Image 1 (cartoon, protein in one colour):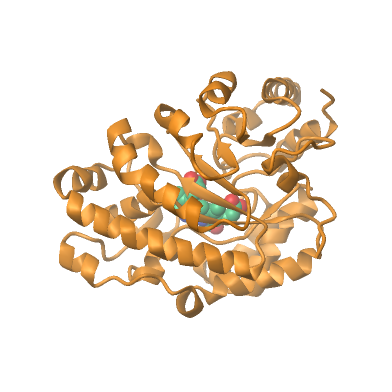
Image 2: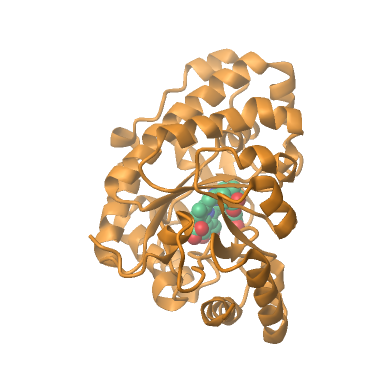
Length: 342
Ligand code: CP3
């Protein structure tokens, strides 16, 4: 089906656009009272993720309410470890938790490569349903975690500040690490191909914990796997968002993808110079800026837009929205992007 609003896809492919497209990481979620109402009426987060009708409904909420230029399928990066054999829970006010983690090579050997047909059908069903409901209004973004970020949850079992256990595994057991990262990569390729077959228009890879690795570790244990995924999934545009990976921006610019996400610490002009002229850049307003008053939001957003320029930019935040952000301020950010004249 032809899209009525294809600004995101055109910007991702480097084409000229009438205005800069805008969407927000974590646009579907707790900032919206409409999301909280559904979330509170069911057993929990996983029910939302695993029930296609509900996932579809919360995916479309920000398109209706915030008027963003793209929807992102409501799911989580943690569905991959679960499909490989490590189930997750989401503990209220604490975050993700895995009862079993990977400690030894035999733990790795007991895992499987995810089969999306068998264990992730709830995601592809949600995508098909959402594409139908969107009826071409805006593109639908699919996503997955990058292998290092998924690996870190499978080793740690929960979020941490340092990811020291996961980094220790890279240093002390590179063989196990590469084995597991390879399995995650195979699983992710199968999963993303299934998302594309179900109808997503663009894919984003989230390497949320890139910032804890050293440059050497990133080049050995993270980037080659991202590169393999980019090469294997080649029918839709791809965005790679590696938070905190300022130290490998030049190498990110050489990936076989169309867009690179910048976090709010990455200087826009310096990033453009390092990443090169061919890629589209996405980002990168500090999500905390949305706590300020509207005139501050407007000035910062306009400055950001002018620095990125009129083409090869997708407006977004430098990381996901925080749940206590005022939706009115989020709407104001989106309106400012849409009304901006270069
Ligand atoms: O709108 C969207 O962005 C789409 C949905 C989405 C979710 N998670 C829903 C969610 C996406 C793209 C993700 C990706 C994700 N999940 C990442 C990568 C992006 C990033 O932020 O760096 C990571 C690291 C996770 C792992 C994860 N899932 C964490 C750390 C948490 C707890 C965070 C919190 O704020 O409580 C989750 C749960 C989660 N995933 C929520 C949502 C809306 C909160 C669930 C709730 O209580 O309703």
